[in-house]
Length: 365
Ligand SMILES: [Zn+2]
Image (cartoon, rainbow, N blue to C red; front, side):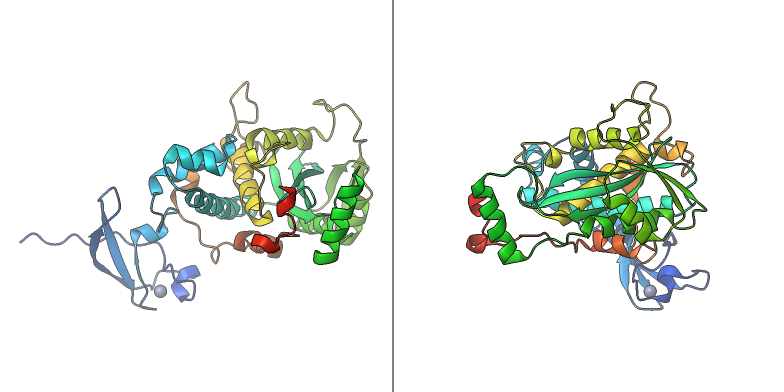
């Protein structure tokens, strides 16, 4: 009889309540619990039991594709979502339901956020920043959403974002005004200070531990208020939003990012029918896009050289989606800022979101 090969040691216990989930694993004891084969690959998978908490798990528990029926399309969905494909298009291409793609997209977004935070938290900001808000809408044009981005002015590294749901403004027909009044009567008016509060929240995340921050914004009055609210040592300079959007504009990193998001994400195209129906889902796609831009895509399309993350000193190499998402990251092992915990949980409510026949916006689209 050939002696049984002992299974490869698992990295930690996947049970967040177990002391060997986050703590040192030198005294951790576990046993192998046989193998099983399943799924399309029919590959054999090792099972384990944690002798501390009794949790049963397998090598698959540590892969970002755990429990997915179609793990084979996970990376392709990631690439599709940053190349301007909608959920339905991808679903048709892979012969799966749009809900399957939506589930993959949500997980990709959550894993992107954890990966980025693991990288970003390595060091404080040292370069000058550009801050600008990307304007889109979620669910209907009556609920505009602003995504506030802090960008490295020299490296184009996206440090992070927060979002605000604001009141629809601009030119409206009398009918549209009446519709807005009707919705505000039903759902309440969005917080007029949302932008100021949400930009301050972003600055607090990004500016934590920084000695001083050199920040460029446009002349929007919400920014100085947000800076005061953040109580951080920030030197602000402003550029008119009418200034030419060339490479010498100090907001170039923001303007370029804006363009890249619109170009690469089908849900933010103007006049699209593929817009996001929920803010939470829009946030998840934004995180995936951010990770792609920071760690996968070259700083310059022409030279195909370093990524923004390499330029900003957060990593020494270029990453592929496959490398980033191979290993599952656990939320209890990476400390997320409070605001981004809500992003991770998909807990951001969508203003004006009703359902079925009670939904007053159904007539609009
Ligand atoms: Zn355990």
